[in-house]
Length: 373
Ligand code: GDP
Ligand code: MN
Image (cartoon, rainbow, N blue to C red):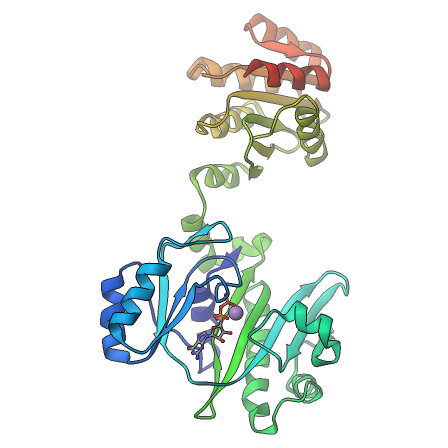
């Protein structure tokens, strides 16, 4: 789960002193009032994507009326497909130098890596391409972590001005502590800056939390339930893997591989999947019923395809679940079912007796589902 800038900064501020924070609001009036008190401010779009600055989503204002105007312009903007519903307004910082710092879960190195560069504030990938020697990348030994000694070595190798070493090392080490304690998979601070007054300040933050650890990180659990849609909440409660997509053929299957193959079959038949929905192994009738309930709420769906390969999952359980769901509330779109494997014969008999359309092969079922809409 990704945190918005202000959420990430609140978290960082629990461990380090100089994190630029401020007011989060969707009201230009409040932005103006804040700016009247603060003087120079920066107004920043709060969306889960980078490059807001370039897109016009980060603007400095010297006067309160200007801040208001920026807020009005930024609210409602579309930044790379993300609609801006709120802005963060913070005291404007007089920047001297801009640096890049992150701790990332580095799959290639199979550990966490620290990345640091004195060329911050810009796209770090571009810096790494043009001047790779300016980007220090250091894979951590997870048992040892990021110690002050290692952090100091990293920032010195990056050529950081000596004046700032102590403060920057503190930011790096506090970040590591936070990452471990809160089960984070990413902390990226770009830019970390020095101000004209000589302070080291966190100006931007991108923080990601390991979804698999949310069960033991209560504070994020609450955040997650606010971020997710009704469909996503239903999927999580049922232990489904669910990804909404753009098409109109709803898909339910058991096992990620089978669901992906089903999506391919739908595409091959000329259709577009409306979702990925994996109900997992050993599904009970109730699970199947809940899966259908999840798709029911989507008005874009014009046809539903259920594809179950019974291993641990029993065909008759699947059939009972589907029939129970429909008995409770008839579907408004056609339903096509492909069922094979354990107790498929019993399942198919139940479904046919219930008047549902079944098919023996996946391709045939996909064709029916696509034609049926
Ligand atoms: P991003 O573009 O989404 O990464 O948003 P950032 O928060 O990193 O802001 C983009 C750029 O805006 C930064 O690299 C800074 O150069 C500039 N910026 C952000 N806040 C301030 C500020 O308080 N004062 C000044 N002078 N510039 C700022
Ligand atoms: Mn940034």
